[in-house]
Length: 239
Image 1: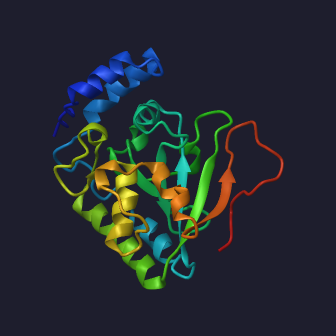
Image 2: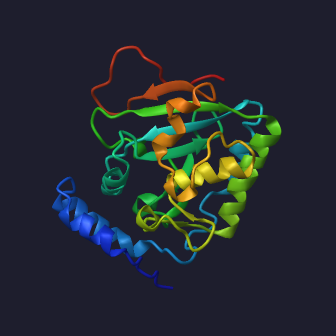
Image 3: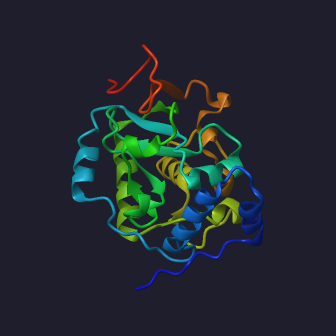
């Protein structure tokens, strides 16, 4: 079945056309990618294979979940940056310190449908000299299991990436979200939320707001592209 192109609000169309930070190549890539998105129905199901959940449940002995903040350098990331005006425009969730269970809402990298997808570190760092900031949040075994169960439920129910939600701040179905909505919502669902904000207004950098000091622990910074500094904290980290 042919996917229906997302209908962008007029304000977003105007912003795309007038913004000087998006190159013609960026705009072209965004326009070509938009037909893969959908703002009214789920187009992504079972994107996470059984092995993903085997690895996730195997991490229950580690009393943390991991939040990874990044700026991928992709056209979509640049577009999100227009709304966030922040250094990090993407947030992902992982259950193990080696980040082999990294997951978030994204555009599917041109391979998978936009929505809930597993991620690899190298796909999050396309900008030379950019880095990924990794934080960990304490989780009781029952909370961590419930969190994995919640991700598994979304994987079964279906999802879509909510690009239009950057402007409308709304979703027509519960599992139509963008990355920060996803991480915020699943943490809230299992009693691990640590700040209150309207779901449509959550930005990636909200998770590391200084106001939440003491809840998150900085776990490391990952550099995948040159220049790579000497020293610093690099994965794999240990709980």
